[in-house]
Image (cartoon, rainbow, N blue to C red):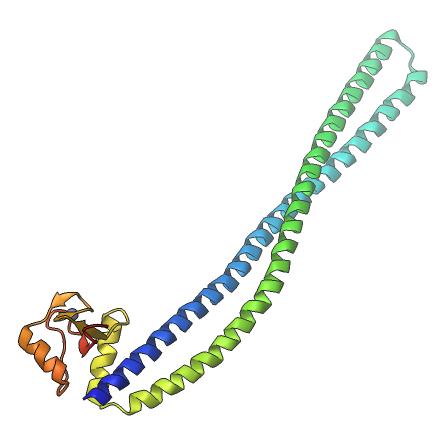
Length: 237
Ligand SMILES: [Zn+2]
């Protein structure tokens, strides 16, 4: 019995190490994924800014076109001045020129506002590009480390798993099954030490008769409260 208990304790130690390695690996993978998510988030903002800038530039080009047309219009109307015959016509043409010039100024103001808007977005875009470059730089450096760590831990994991298989192979199938179930259900503690008459898995007192049986190590004892497999720890330990 003592031999089986020793094997089970070895197995539990290996299994807890395996769990810990798996958790660490999960952490590495999450860190890697976080870099990708970060980069994707900034890239999405950049794409959006790019779209906005493109749209504004289109509007800017349109305003430029209108402005050219309006300036032509002023020239065209002004060219008519020398041919004017009557005072009435003269006033009308001057009014037309005034309106065209006012229209010009409006367009110029709109154009300026548009260009300012574009400049602000361009500045924002530059900031985002710098942010993305920084994320990518960090991701490259830390990412390489993480990949290295993942590959190292995979090797360790493989070795531990092989050891586990060989230890598990020495145990009777039914006992192994019982242990596996307990390990899962009892948060990685399938085996608990007993000391001074109590199970240290759940800190409950064991019936005195059972504790005496446990000390003799003749048969498998499980805690009546938490079902864990029990083994004896030194009283003075
Ligand atoms: Zn217990």
